[in-house]
Length: 184
Image: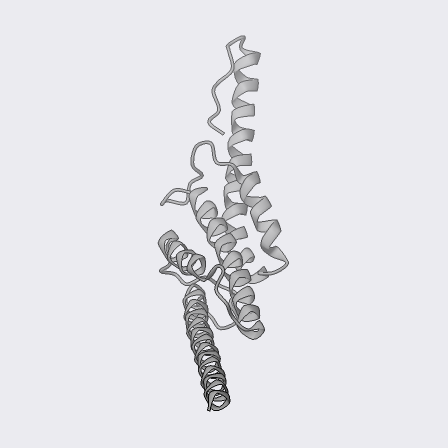
């Protein structure tokens, strides 16, 4: 009788451990499935930052807030358990987001070179914007081409202002006056 009780207790114990492990595996699969859904949602939000399926151009209505929202969602996924496939998708999404952020930065800085009338702004740093464009040119040539139009316009205006200021300075110095002030 005592032996039957011990065997029965062992069998019940094994069944409980088996049920607990099945429950844990099931819960783990459910958690991984939820993580997969969240990663897909983040991917959709990153895709919405672009205006085309090839991801060559940014959407026209995006703002810095859109990037902050996606980055907040990504931060929530740090340390989450996920399958290799989901982790790979998340890595690709993070790369796409990083590229979109670089594109947005270039676009904002290229737009800031000129005022609403298309005239170069005071103290415009064309060199920094050119460097950003160069960094992105290999990956996003069509986007950079659009931004380079603005950059080249600003650069041409900057050169014209510098040439005009130099010409005025030559005129003033030939008349023994002091140099004029240049705003570029």
